[in-house]
Amino acid sequence: MTTDNEFLFINYILFTMKSITIKGSERENVGKKATKAVRDAGMVPCVIYGGDQPVHFTAEEKAFKNLVYTPNAHTVVIELNNGKKADVILQDIQFHPVSDKILHIDFYALKDDKEIVMEIPVKVTGTSPGVLAGGVLRLNQRRLKVKALPKNLPDFVEANISPLEMGNKLYVTKIETNNFKLMHPDNTVVAQVRISRAAMKAAQEAAKAEKGGAKKKK
Image 1 (tube, rainbow, N blue to C red):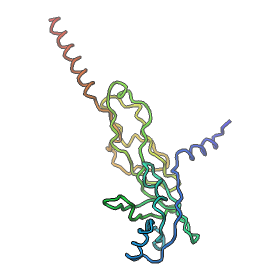
Image 2: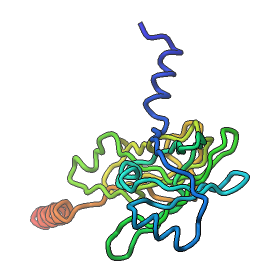
Image 3: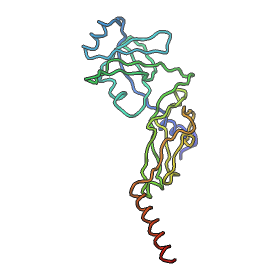
Image 4: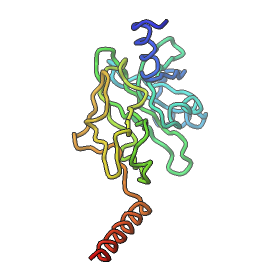
């Protein structure tokens, strides 16, 4: 039998943000020549901001695969060869304009007692009566800005479309939040169910038929 405390612990595991680990080496030389040499060796120059001093390091480009090439949001643990370790989030990334190779990455150090703002993916849940009736679901916001302590950052923001009839909109104020805030105006539309052309045509034909029937009665 699952107790209330066990349920809360399970819920925390399921919905708080996942973390990935990246191993790297701290850099001492950060000039242009040194940076070019780093890239020529297949490594990515990176910087961690938010601490007492910026920390420069390098890591293999393939180490960032699960961080960069994914729709999900993650916190990151940076482990350096000199024993230094930092909990961070991705702040900025630069790609080569032709090859799309990663040129540079900036990270921001997390502090347990300091809230941060991060873009989190939106996950649609539920079944919309409007969609079942022939409407078309449009996801207006694929990511939402969330403000929270690092431990409370969610893996995703859940958008429940169950109440949406055809023509209805789901506003950000209707999104359930748990230990985090959504940094958007109240009139921000997260999702909506639009009337499809087929449904609109059927409604028009039904209206014409009803109008024609009324004329015949007269």
